[in-house]
Image (cartoon, rainbow, N blue to C red; front, top):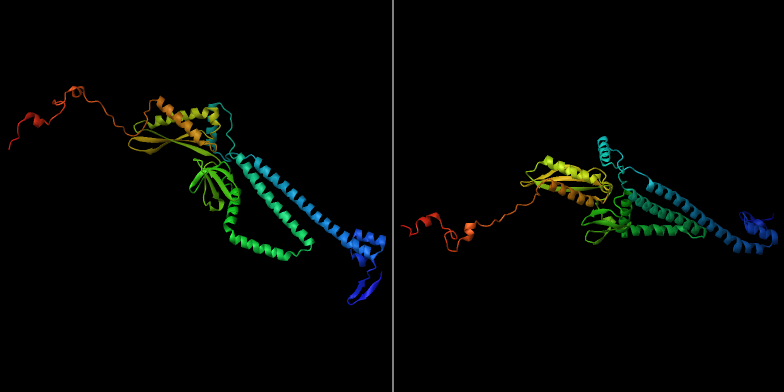
Length: 378
């Protein structure tokens, strides 16, 4: 190998392999030198063939690795979310022995072995899949963002100004779009903490209705009048969910004040037990209805309360049927309905009704006037 004197040592002679292809010659450059031993041909292959091909292969390798990492991450996320969605969780992890015995006795009386409905299965599936979608999107953005930065670095782009510009842009967006960022963060936290989901009935400030759609930015719900409300997630400070986990049907039934409350309680329990024994209605109730007793007192009536724990969003139909059963049982037992005072108007006596106009019966006078028809004395 030939070397030439250089100001700082030795420099490789261009007419050699290392002089034309560098210290680490590639396959194409080495092959071109071995075949031609021409400096021009070797430089052409190195600049116009080996360089672009090597850069293209490197970019292709980065892209393939990014897709592989993304696929593996998505597969792991899918397994985790599917396992969370299909996991069977009990309705009540710890049930007191008294409640368990009560349910067993009710099932024995009903001669029905239908298990109570599983609460929250569909909701858990929706929540798990929504979280999986967010995680997959985040992983894709992260992986492809890193791959894009590597490719730009291989192309010779100076990444320092780009990263600084991105940082400044992020700070500007953070200050200028605070409400938008707050809405997205609130949407993510609502989804992670499972505040509510599609199909739930919620109360938010002045709006109350069923959730029709939920995104990371807004929540859309429809009230009982059909009005659609669009609410930004960042403005929701408190929310009441009427259909999460289980619901309760509450029936307040007034009875006359003079009735025997023990008898009324027995009649209500009989009506509730008849409803719970029916297979179709029992599927909607998680526990046997309970008569709580006197809820309110007044001078004319006593309000008796009966409750039933039901599956989510089924409390209204159970309440309507249970109210009808209680009314029928009380009517059959002869319990008069309690209500406001009524004014009874009766017909006048027969003598007063048949007396002619102008007669004493028709126009009664004071007793003193009837005894002394004359002029009054001094």
